[in-house]
Image (tube, rainbow, N blue to C red; front, side, top):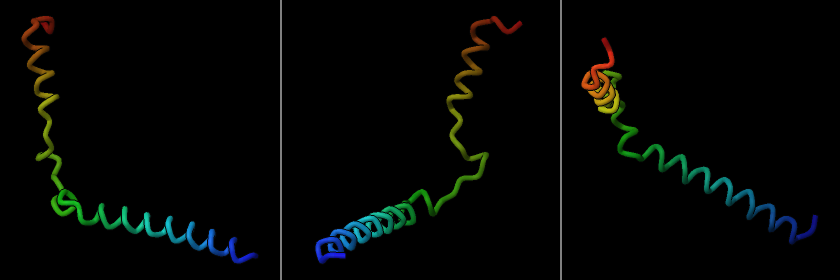
Length: 61
């Protein structure tokens, strides 16, 4: 392989590896990654609002 081919290959593989490492580091350093939520702590406001809207229409019973 020519010198230019080696240069392009090294730059390409190095860039992809660097970008992968950057993405992994960002995910691991995210503040939310350190605080997993239990199922009962998940914000389910949309579901509660839906129930109230259905109850207020009076179409249930």
